[in-house]
Length: 123
Image 1 (cartoon, one colour):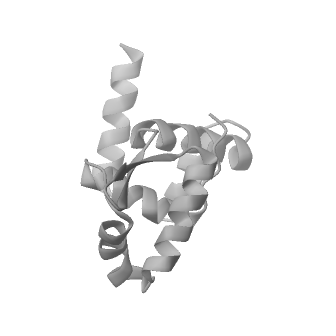
Image 2: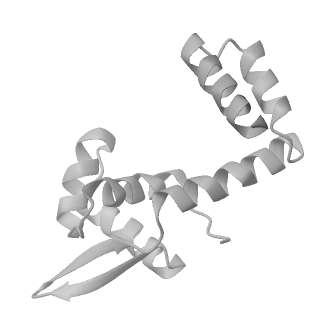
């Protein structure tokens, strides 16, 4: 997967993913608009861009279109996570974790989750 989604487009994808069912452009705008202050026209533009990229599909429902994602959120997040680590940390995760620790960005819950994951991976 080599799908590049902008931050703004990701907002629209998140609305579609969280809905769990196809949305009209107006429904997507209702979910996003209050937070971002976007108009319906802006959301329609984002949906058109995402459709052109193959990230969403639409089907006609009377006089409106229903939009749904063509990719699962987990697959996109996984791909972007790997791309991020490759781009900024040479493909190694330990420098990322070290950097987060240096920035005090890890709380006790995060550290416990990382320790549990490492324990599971070792066994």
